[in-house]
Length: 395
Ligand SMILES: C[S@@+](CC[C@H](N)C(=O)[O-])C[C@H]1O[C@@H](n2cnc3c(N)ncnc32)[C@H](O)[C@@H]1O
Image (cartoon, rainbow, N blue to C red; front, side):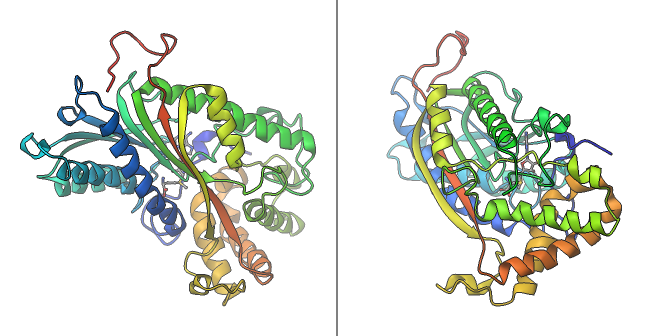
């Protein structure tokens, strides 16, 4: 039995029916909402640049962390490039300067399908001309490690990724604590296990903030979205928790059928955590590194193709079809590599078929929504000597 390490965490590669590329419409919604925050962050960057160090004459460096592959991979960096071009168009005197030089970096874990990303990068560079000169690179690695040189980035974006922990809490993967058949925080999860997930998220997000604070220029920006909770109450995960409780139910059905070993289910937990806005704000404040420009929560329906979701009606028009969209496509595209790595590829088709049935039953009680948190942060004025070398660049 494999452990669910960070190496197994990547979205389904390629362009096939169950690939992330074909099944990332929900995540696209969150990215679309980030465009305004990215524009504001860019305008903020230009506005805080000093006259002795005008940003218009500098190259800008932009990174998307957890880009995955497919149509979403370039959305955020493209939005940042567009924001720079539009901003310059509205600034008197800037048009006479040479086109801006922008360097965009796309990061994900090494198992990500970077081949597909590489092909779309060439198109981005081409389409930006002549308004901007774009160079691009891919940075495989964990965003819980240092990825970039000190004080080298102006804008960091990350969509739909920071709810993934660096690893399952060690005390769970070692078997020192058990999660009673849950794979994340469920109704029967022991309080000690809830605390382990929470602690791991606190450690990971604090580390992420400290690492990015080293890599951003002073005054640099971060725009982030990730799945979250609407309430600070830990067990009020609502539908984000249910999504994983239903997957645990589907796995339990396969255990009953003798298709999955009970001990394999006991040993499986997701490296996942959905925080509340309060938790995120508290950690940012505790870090002392960033000012919070914006926080918000919005909700996305589980089935992005459910047309009936546009109205006020809470009923899902076609539960079976929606469940298929949710289970077979959206969730499978995200967790199949983790599931296959732990339980073996042989159970994947059957598991997501059973999951579809369980999700359909759940949707028959009413529409399910994912809360998504968005955050915009600004690195505080001057970095302390603790994290900045004397040769670092400032705006
Ligand atoms: C749901 S996808 C989001 C992809 C894209 N940003 C979007 O919005 O559609 C989450 C991505 O985060 C990546 N990811 C998770 N943990 C990571 C880590 N520690 N370092 C880098 N990428 C990570 C996953 O591999 C995956 O590609």
